[in-house]
Image (cartoon, rainbow, N blue to C red; front, side, top):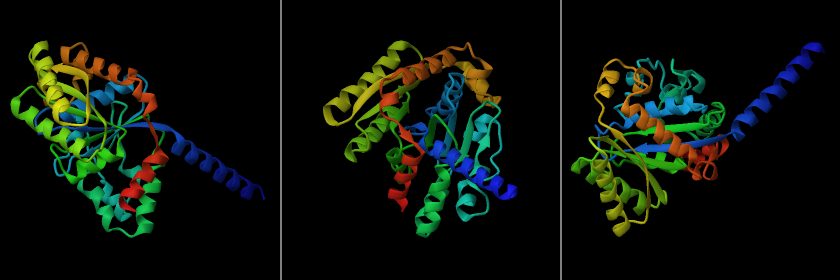
Length: 290
């Protein structure tokens, strides 16, 4: 009788934990770029660490198909992928890797879209497991560069978009193409913009204003200037040492820029107004793949 009571108590406690996890608010950002080489993944990692330092529990979903490298910049190994979880070889909890910096990462990418070929029961099981991942406050989705089915899909799942670009003319042109896709498919009505690798303030202002002017003229999407990051030589040193700059050089100019960007994001009134629960995220996945 006592054994049965203990089992019943454990089942009740587990149910309460699952329900609490499913109802926990999580802010989902889809981080995109028009082209590679603009520092998108590096921004995701450093921003995740700053958010963690600000008291938020953060999960990174590396969704860069074929070019997953967030773990390399963190200097950690990812032994399992979502493909293995989908196949049933491991659980989703096995796929989550805890970094030494207090943030978690899960490898996504092409394997995630294998879900389309699964039977409905298996799809729902994966989605149900996703809703039990934990009480994360922020999910940063590191998408592949450019416009693809995958990046568009993850953008649909997200609450907001963060577009990372540089002042380089080709980068701005490709960034505009991303904004055009967001507007054309009515994915979101606003996009946060981060201008990376600037040499001076005027370069960042000019780059943002070019995107703003063109978007206001031709697109139905609002841009929000979220911040700029200076081209800091210590960034390259941190990358080579596989240690995020906000930790290796916390007082560096780029580190201060990232810190200010994260503060701006958290202080944005839309942070609490436009937010999801893990259960809502699961429901979106069911609608997409179910």
